[in-house]
Image (cartoon, rainbow, N blue to C red):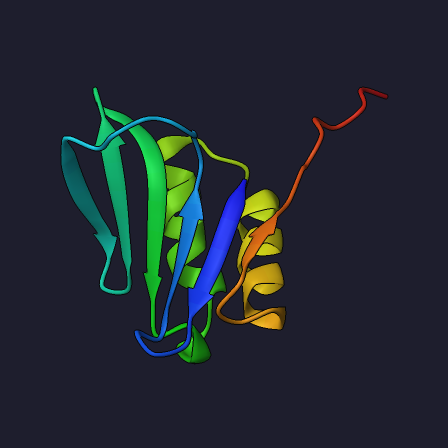
Length: 96
């Protein structure tokens, strides 16, 4: 995942699928918009992250069956390095 916190816009962009262009969007939460390509999520826009990232990202993860922890890791990484793109690689959980 690629993530970027734009401090001027006060928004985090998390790219889920590279190279895909959105054809529509879904406002999943008042502060979370998901860009969709052929009905599948390709990017998440998180607005006003200082108000908290957990609730809007949980709504996104629940609606689109995405890894909530991976989304949170990407968002937190973007906040830690504002106005720069960060890349977060999250592997699947090892089965017990």
